[in-house]
Structures are given as C-alpha cells and as structure tokens.
Length: 237
Image 1 (cartoon, helix red, strand yellow):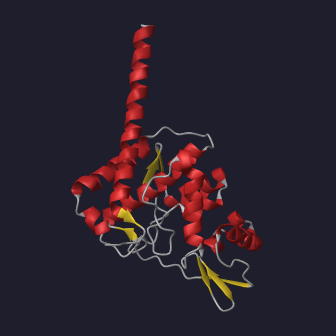
Image 2 (cartoon, helix red, strand yellow; image 1 turned 30 degrees about the horizontal axis):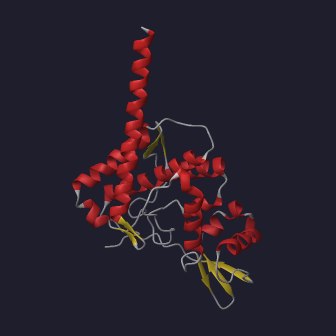
C-alpha cells in the first residue's frame, strides 16, 4: 500500500511539474512572437485563435500553480510573469481597445485574476503582495500595465537564474529613455512612476540616487517635475 501511495504521489508531482513547464514554455513562445521593443502586436495575436487559447492556458497554469510563502527570486519571477500574463489576457479579451482603462476605469481594481488559487485584482496583487513582500524598486520597470507610458514589456519571461540582470536591464532601458527621464531646461521631467512610488526609491533624494546608479547620462537634476501618464494602449503592428 505504501509503495502504491508513494508512486501515486510521485505521479502527481510529475504531472504538476509538467503543467508548470507547459505554461512557462508557451508563455516564452508567445512573448517572443508578439512582443517587440515597440509594443505588443495585439491585432495579430487576437487574429490567431490558437495563440489566444495558448495564453488562456498560461493564465490557467498560473492560477493552478502552488502557493509559496518563500521570498525568493523564483517567487518574484513567478509574480512578475503572472501579473504581465494576466494583463495580456485581459487586454486581448477586450481587444480592440484604446487602452486598459478604456470603458473600464476600474480595470486594475476588479477581482479578475487568479494567482495560485486566489482571486484578486491587479492593484491588490501589486500593492499588497509584490511590493511589500520583495521591497524591490526595480519591479516598477518589469511590471507592464499595457500602456504607452509604462516600461516596455520584455519579450521573454522573467527567469530566476538571471533575474537580477533582467531587472537591471529593464531599469537602465527605462531611465535612459524619454519615457523614464526627459531632460528639461530646468532639470528633468520624470515618469509619474517615480512620484507614485517614491517611497520605494527612498523619497525625493532617493530617486536621484537611484537615477545616478542606472542612468548613463546626467542625473543630478536641480529641478524635478513629473510627466503626464499616457494610458493609451502599448500596441505595435
């Protein structure tokens, strides 16, 4: 009896592992196919029913993934991928659209996603789970809200084995672009992200220290202002 039970448990574990590998492999393929530095090819993706269904399989895999209370790179990578995959799924579900808030001002607040068996909202998942658990400012350049002012979606999943390098690259790309930092005659107009989440960067002074670490150009700005946030869809053809 014990031998049979052990074999059954082993089979269940292997099945769960295979399911995880399946959604992760599908997610990697979809990102590579439909995401570029200019945005997401939503129209092309929406026109391919098999790939729309494949993305549904990805979020179902995320919904069924075992919960973990361990603060680790594996878990952070999973959280980032989960948020971004669900964003894509919900945007495609209502595509064509002008952006996440078009016709749905509470897009980020409705309980419309499932992470490891728990139904939640994008806002709660980011503000109450990811931010306080990991206390990692670079997440703000990895999470993608499907908007033009948002840091670009990466064309590959976040991988625990190279997560630090991926987060560094995302951060450098954004703060060295006009979306993240736009120099002005008086100083610089920063992304609204640095205003909304300034506490994650150590306050106003901390923002400048953060920029100095990641910007290749000028970062000791005398006067800081913030850009308006463009919630238009981050679409490319």
